[in-house]
Length: 227
Image (tube, rainbow, N blue to C red; front, side, top):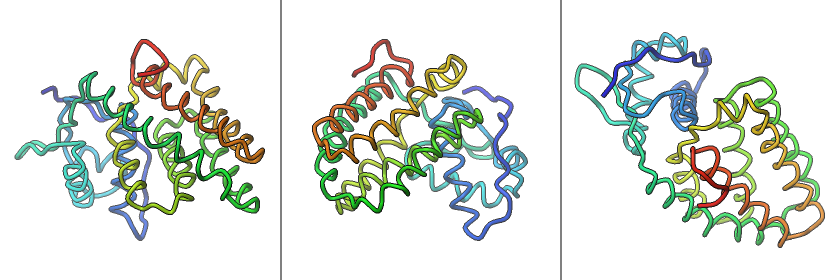
């Protein structure tokens, strides 16, 4: 259990759904490794970085406790939970069972008129990489994939995938950003939409399988491209 200085986090500002915004910013920071596993962070320190008071930070952190991403430490703050290599393998394996075949199935039902909006979502991922915004990258990536899977109309599947994605740790994002490989990975989202636009379910499924392999094999610090 290691105390540590809080990394730079984006100023959240004053918004109507402040607790939700804080929760998602903290979730993205945990997933990307900006908030380190095993480290205890205090609500006042996090609030100072986010530009808000400690109270909504505590409330947001309690939501993340329920999600299993952090645990509370009385009078100290919140410790980011650690995940083993086996945990990450298991998460990736379940995602591979669900996401590629689901994307294959939704390709024929995605309306052509929805493609420009999906392109905008994909470009937001690329833009975040170009700006070096890892937290923004995680948020944009989450929105894109959940929007795509949403065409399945299966809310239970959406809940499961959202939870799996939230628990995955992408601890290799910073070196990938510095090497330029994250930018190439971000561009895969446009490649995925090219296949959707071409109405190629099989190709879309294969690309999604490879994409999830990157999450486990590269971004999470593994040795290969697939679990």
